[in-house]
Image (cartoon, rainbow over all chains, first blue to last red; front, side, top):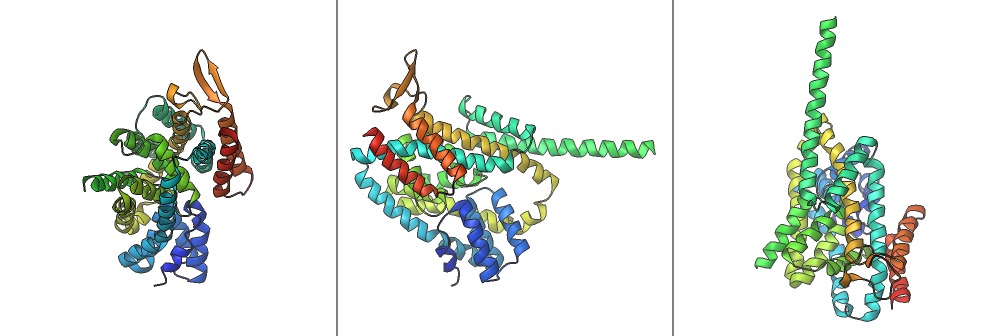
Length: 183
Length: 196
């Protein structure tokens, strides 16, 4: 029953939700301890899917198993689903109005700015060196100018990650062998 | 029924491949829509704008908005389940297992490559919206009528007012703690002043 509380705190969405969840689940309810919640956030961000959904599913799962997952998801997402529904219905009625159209002419560039900001925010943690910068530029160029779909780009990125990991381990093993020989 | 299944599987696919949260989903979603013609790019941009204004995860909001547009309430349910089910399944199946392998060098290495890729794809999403809404390099039918368009050799290069709005939105988000909702609402008001 208490999972509905999670729904009430979902306002703000995505990254904004993280400190709210932490306060509620760790400090008020003491469902999970502080170290575990940091791990949950890290894992939720690494898994595919929206971060907010992953986090709430994770928290629900670690508290009460699969029923907990379902309860947390429903509790968390029901309010936003209702709000967006109301907005969509309202929008469908006014979308051909010229005032609304010109308002959206102004909103499009703001969305571009907003998404750039989301990219910048993620980039601050993901782009740490020249290698990751090159990967980022490469992904951008491949998608924008070569018209390659994002999903194949993501998959080839994962394959590259595997290759690099294998390469690193074999290199390390070789170095260790050499050291053993030198001794 | 077919359209509902299509909605469900489209969002399930998006959900499964969107590492790094909602905004990564948009460029993939745009490409999918271009293929299956469920909505036009400008309709989808409207939906993204509304999704960004509402509370809750932006990915869920966009799914619900598109689901409603395409197939009404059943569409909402199909799109919502499409987004939520893969997350729930992945989390319950992978949760305990993933905690163990999360620090494994192989997983680290994959995530180290994926994160900058996601970043690049998010910038691609922004560029895509700018291109398709006549803000930069507009095609003949997308040139903004009341805008200050800059032409070079008969091709539109960019539209000044939109460009200023985009840069202003970015720096307001970067330098102040203004909530995105107010940035979107404010730019809507400015849009009425600038483009009507």
